[in-house]
Length: 614
Ligand code: AGP
Image (spheres, rainbow, N blue to C red):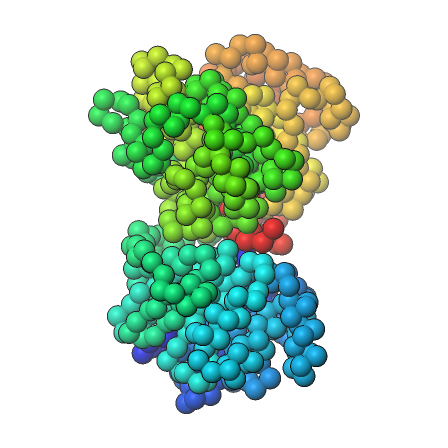
């Protein structure tokens, strides 16, 4: 989604802003632009395509050096990605510039009113209307902050806006409804951005703006009000990521780095949550044990990879906590009239904490008086503020669009919650919970062990780069793993891939099997003998029809060897924890195959890291 950077201070604004936009490139975009205030004049530059196009334009025609400015990377929603529709947008007088992330749902009516009043709008965007609305409001007096507040009160939809005006060259004004906006607090300088990554090279002290707030940024001060102009409570926080953590660390791609970071990420997400007595300590969720004892149903809402984590959570919650658990795609959830009440626990899983589909599902659940627990990887993002409680994953910044370490840490988080529910509800004996927690604590080294044996998987991936389709099969928690493996291949290699429950094969999908078709099969531990034997039969069925079988099974499982064209062994772990080790080969497989096809695995086509519009 769109990236936003604003700056006011003593440094050359253009340098700070363009560097900030570069750190936000991972969010996915299709045009970029900047605005600078200097000598009382406003200069803008914007280009379709990647940031390099804008940098070239700025080199060819450098704007006057100013210390107040802003920049934007746009992911097109209204109007094609071209120079004309790129942000910033200006008013008729060329003295106001505005950038925007989100969707203004009533822009068509506003645009009609503006054109009726004689304004000349030049782009197809919803954003440009805001520049002209600000122009009119500035004529009414009160300066840019008041003008922004009055304009925001007329807008409907999701928007983060940042604007500058030649009438006050030491001021950047931001406004926020739904889409993310954070303030970076410097010394004699201040920053605005859609993500802290844009300014952590300068400061790691930040303020997360809340819903319907306006911020006035000056070199020596920040003022935050609501849309009515009343002072707003703000909470400062310290960003615990440093610049190096957001760099590639020597890998060719962020995704490779993030796959390699998974043992650490899993360990960090367990850190501090297992007491010296072996019991779980999750006070941070701010959900009293008695409230959790009164829960009679769990509903998980999430999208994409996070939804796959939810599907695995279902098995864990039902098995350990003895609670019925539904898993819903967040964008479907509120349209099916779900049955919710005060005894329902809704768990919202989101790496970014900004997925609009998931946020809207959470708002619906809150309206129905359900308790909402968030699982999120980004401190200060929107989701935690909209939940009754949050359990943060500690994966660190996940820059690559394809989620890897965030997924594994989401699994750890749902295992912790499921075991905690068992602990407080007494649905499992204390020693059973203790034993499982001890096994969970060993998972970082199990994941590390998998990573040490991935070279054959990379060779296999390169050998399949010319394939048109790969199928993925699994049973029990292996089924969501199959879905996740298919999603990784789709989003990285742009090839058809589909995950099935292996038991579904004979109900239709087996018709897809043909000579040489690669099929990845995730085999449950031998301890699950019934499930295990059934999936071995499935492997025989597809092999008999010519499939090229790629089998992921626990080390020492010799029963699958006769039917596996390729056998990938993973450490033996309990069934419910097996996704932590069986997912990793599928991540490596998809990443290597996409790389072999020459794709940019960090920024796959058409995709954004955080889908902040519905
Ligand atoms: C997964 O690789 C994708 N990047 C996508 O499916 C992602 O998991 C989904 O959009 C949810 O994002 P979130 O976890 O930030 O809410």
